[in-house]
Structure formats: C-alpha cells, structure tokens
Image (tube, rainbow, N blue to C red; front, side, top):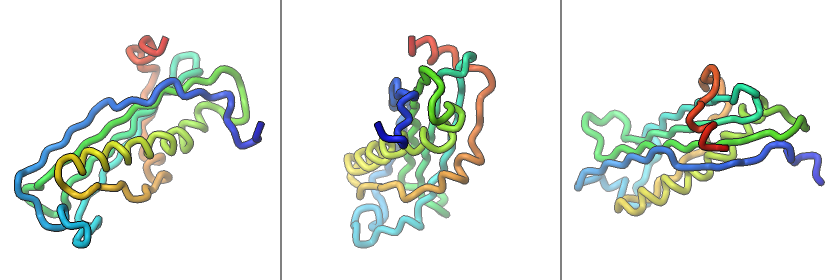
Length: 158
C-alpha cells in the first residue's frame, strides 16, 4: 500500500445539495460562441463550511460555488451549486480528519462540481462553463467550521 494513501479516511457520500440556474432568453455572444468566451467577465464566488461529529470521527464538508456575470446590472444567468461530502475516519492514520478537511476534502469535491456546472450550462444552451483553477488556500482560510455537529446529516449517515 502506498504511503500517500489516506486509507483511514472513507468517503461516505458526495451529493448535490443545491443547484440553482436561471437564464434569460437573450444572452451575450460570449456565452454562446466559445471563440468569444472570456472567463474574466464571470464572477466566481466560493465558500466552504466544515462540521465535525461530536466524536470527531466524521466530517461534513459543504462547498458552494456561485457564478454570475461581472459588472452587469441585470445578469443574463445565475448559477449556484452546493455539494456536500461526508467523510469518516475509522482509526488514527497518516493524517487527521481535521487536516484532511483543510485541503484534501475540498480537492475531492470540486471536480464533481466542475462536471455539474459544465453539464448544466451546456444543457441551458450556453457554452460549457468550466470552473477555473481555484485558490484553495484562500478558500480554506475563509472557511467556516460550524460548532458542534450537523445532527441531521450525521443521523442520515448511520
């Protein structure tokens, strides 16, 4: 077994918690014609929330990405995607669940979000919106850890 594996941490589930997409009938050319696309015209707002079980052996991580047009009075589209990852730790290992929650857990969830966002934008008749590389360090520094545990999701996990 590789030393790089975190075999003591399991992914219980990754699920789509919220998806909101609104689009007006007329959108600018840069959202339809890929050759005119400019990611700089879009605003990507991100947030992370973490909650640990009382025992500290389970983690709920929520990652939210909201995308809209920058500097536009009435955006032609708005997209919000929130995904939840539930992770558990069976025994002590090479990394603590708290440390895993900082970088590893968001890095696992974000590719799932990329696929959802790309797919929904394509189905809405605009170019596939591909989330650019995100500054995970900044996201992590701004992350909120929710005191206590998220009892509802922890109960659902059992």
